Length: 85
Image 1 (cartoon, rainbow, N blue to C red):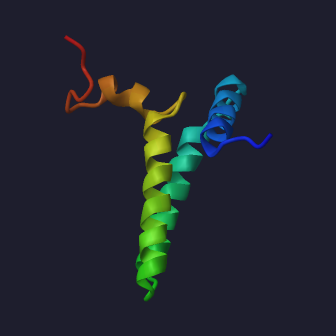
Image 2 (image 1 turned 120 degrees about the horizontal axis):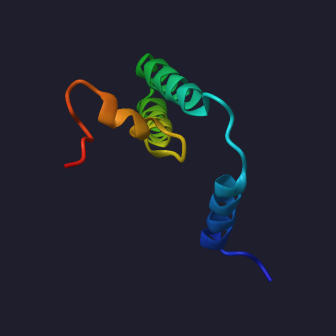
């Protein structure tokens, strides 16, 4: 019996939710996402630019929305983004 791709992704997500996070993991992910985006901009190949943009954007999204992500810092920003009324 083979696992479907959706089931495999669910297993990966479950494992990720149960594991303990590394200190500063979201900052490392943010840095990696920015590095991939900057590196992919220099490529002449549109395939590499597109793949780099997709991967970099996914890493930025993960840094912002992950379990210990940067989204928990939004209420403390001076612009008031994320304040709950």
